[in-house]
Length: 305
Image (spheres, rainbow, N blue to C red):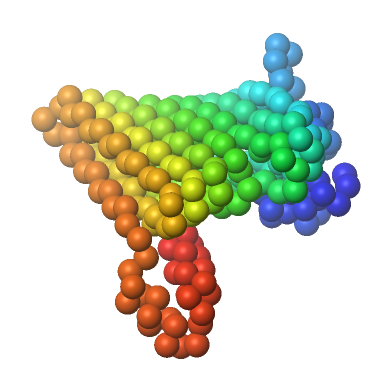
């Protein structure tokens, strides 16, 4: 891989070298490297671009990295990845996509990820998106995530996009069964004329199931953000959705929460806040010697931490 692709890998997956454990690295639409372990198998799909990741029951303290990098201007691809996590497993999955576009044509990656997490399994899933390059061609990412949690399963998803993506529509659909728990933490920053849309839909179908959605975002300059969440409680459950956004310059942010209770014991809560940086916060930091711009950066970085 060249220096540009290696930088993208570092940004989206924290990889300075080939990772230990299982991995599948994709570059410009082609397989760039793969490794499997005794407990984690990676199989190329035969009917479409993508892979099946099969994690054996009882697998503990292992990880799998599946980053994608694009450095060819004008390349557009859709990749379908399915994760099958066996009972009582406890694993970390690191995905992410980086696009470097120095040309005039749009580059686009659509990643469709489906998770089938069996009873009492635990998954930590990290997905980062990053764009670079000084070309006029757009950098477009449209990730779709489908999550199926069996009774007692747990999945924590951390999704981050803080630089360089011109347009993104992030769709997440989840079904949560008895005693299962889903936690999603989203961080987004847009600038220029970028557009970011988030669409969460979660059905809690089993007693004592839970979901906690936390979205934090910063919109700068003329960028636009749209946040939509729909939580449905079909059993005795607890659902919480929180959307906090900082708006700056001439940006636009909208939040559209929706809660539906189909059971008398469904406990559903939504919190949303959109506002500018408080003047007293800027003043306090500027009295410590920071310029206004430096103070804004400190506040934004702390908010997205």
